[in-house]
Amino acid sequence: MKLAKTIRLNFDKTDTLVLIDEKFRFFTRFVSGRPIIITDDNVNRIWGKNWEGYPVIEIKSGEKSKNVETVVEIYRQLLHYHVDRSWFIVGIGGGVVCDITGFVAGTFLRGLRFGFIPTTLLAQCDAAIGGKNGVNFEGHKNIIGTFNQPVFILCDPVFLTSLPKDETANGFAEIVKHALIADDSLFSLIEQHVSDICTLQPDIISALTMKSINIKTTVVMADEHDLGERRKLNFGHTFGHAIESVTGLSHGKAISIGMMLAMEISIRKGFLKNDTFLRVKSLLLQLGLPVSLKTDHSKIKEAIIKDKKRQEQKIHFVLLSGIGRTIIEQFSLEEMNRFLDQSAII
Image (tube, rainbow, N blue to C red; front, side, top):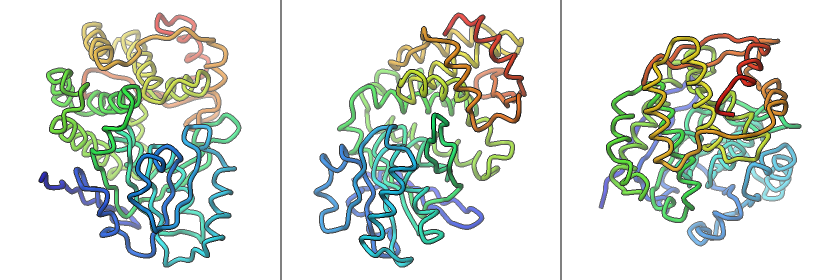
C-alpha cells in the first residue's frame, strides 16, 4: 500500500496538514470535533455511501452554485442541525465546494474548524490550497470572500478515476501554470510524461500533485494575504476569469487561453522568446487544452473591469520572461483593451 506524503504548513492562525495519497475513508482521524459534510449532488451520488451516518449538506454542482444564496441556505441547514463551535465542517468536492466550505466555516459563528477532501485534480493541485475562500456576486468572480486556512487537505487519487477527461484537463492547466511561474524542471517533467499524464498513471499524477502543491504553498507561505509575491499565482487568471465568466468555459480551459494571452503580451513587451511561447502552446494542446478562442471582446473587457485585483483604472498583470520566471507589471485598462483588440488568440 502506498504511504501518504505529508506537508505541514504553519500559518498565522492555523496549522494545515496536507496529505497526498491518503485514503479519504479515514478522514475522521483528522477531524477534531463532530463532523458535518458539505458536498455537491454529483459527488454525493457517486461517493456518498462512504459518509453515511454523518449529517450532510448537499449543494448543486457547478459554478452557478457559487453564490450568496447557496451560502445562506447552508447557514439555514447548520442552524437546523444545531451546529455549535464544537463541530467540524468537512468540504468534499471540487473547487466550488472548497470555496463555499471555507467561506461558510470562516463566517458561521465567527469561525468553525474545517478541512477539505478535494475530489478533482484542479482542487487537489490548486483550489483547495492557500486559504482563499469566496463566492461570486452579480458577475464579479470571488468578490466576496475570506482568507481562512483549513486544518487538513486530504488528496486521495481514487476520486480522479470518476472524472471525465475535460475535468482532468482543468487540473493540467493549473499544474502547467505552477511550472511556468516557478519551476522549469517541472515543465520538462510534464513534457516527458504527457501520455502517462493523460491516462492518469498514479505515480506521475502523485508526483505532479506533490510538486504543484509545494510550489503553491511556498508562494502562499511567503504572502498569505496576497499583498505581493502571491500575485504570480494569478498568471493567466485576469483574462482567464473574464473568459470563464463570459463564455461559461470551464476554469482550466479558460486559464489555458488566459496563459496564452499573457505570453502574447510578454512577447510584445520583449520579455519572452517566441520559441518558448510555441513550446508552451504545444504542451497545452497535447494535454487537451485550448489555446485560442473567438468571442466578443467587449464582454471580455467588461468582465476585466469587474476583476477584484483592479485598482482604480489599473491592474497588476503577470508576465513571463522564461519558463519558471515571472514579471509583474501594472497595466491601465485602456492598454489592456488595446491589446485585446490586437490579439491573434482571442
